[in-house]
Length: 474
View 1: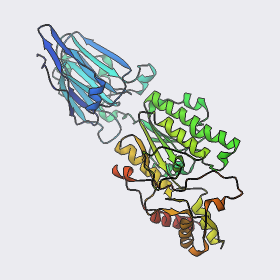
View 2: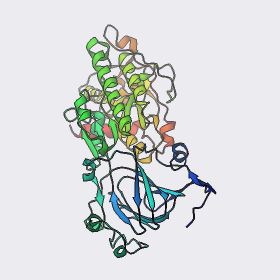
View 3: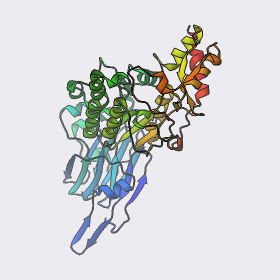
View 4: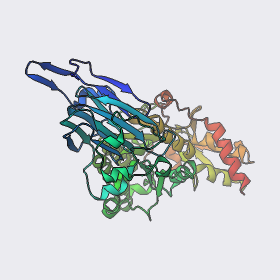
């Protein structure tokens, strides 16, 4: 069979999710032929994952009928034929609804195929002296063999129509002994690791992902962000994503010498360790930022606004954002005025209302509350939809309010009287007290997150639900 020359570089989807067959341009003349077997820029532009190959392997097969597989390995592969021709068979052996899906095709040097981690790969040579070549994005090791998943070439469920019957083909004894599909343990997907999982956001993520084995939670006891050992002792090949839910958020304490050191350690140094890990292992890093990276001079803050933090806390968050931005696969989720499980402004105001206390509350800082359940939902949405990497503002929606106006709403919902809340300026409120400077305008533009299909719920509705749950508990 002759090679078809001068095909256009083209991608063809297959019945197995993530498995893509490519036509490759081969240029030939009377001397032979030449092709770009792997061309990152062109192929990534065509939709091939930028899977960062680490090793190039070649299987040379002397005789037609040599049959190898079906092996699902814990790495991605980009497969092509250097010389000869093969019949390829691929079976999805990953956990999920496509488990057992089959795709077959004949390949010559003018084609290549991308095979994601966990998809079983097999081939049968259709010509003598066939060289089968593949790029993989991890280095082979003896330890990795324990993570392989295998399927018998003769499995009746897959029902692969081998051109040369298996009884006439050249097979290894190991391949003959592999299990049928009914006995195959599917390869689990790579996990999401949530660090800082005992804080407000971590608890919301625990609730959102409750019961899902693909998400692992680590509080300080399980993963100490300040310890290099925590990073060195974990097998990062088993993960796809890190969600960083840890942060130093004591805004006023950060202005003290001790607080400044702690804020930089958690919000910058630890984040740098996470970023380095994400880059080295090609992970997605999700990081939560703050409205405090802005000076509040603009009435609404878009993602593209240059940062201009006023205090130490804001400076550490801005520095952490800059570190994360160098990770190729990153989401920086910028929030404001976070409310979740634990001590917070809404709970404090509800307690004052129930005790008949009439507080003075700042009325010249304007923004929107952000409930942790919606931050968690927004993060999950970005990850599951594969939205473009980058910075996303995420608060709840609705008319911006001052802290005093929010306090009045809480009083009304908690059985008190809104009129019992009086307004005071930030300057007056903090007069004579050690306090960090605060942005007066913290309203975040939500157009970008909405464009991904995520609609942040209204503040008013979430506040009613939150207080309803709080008051019903006592």
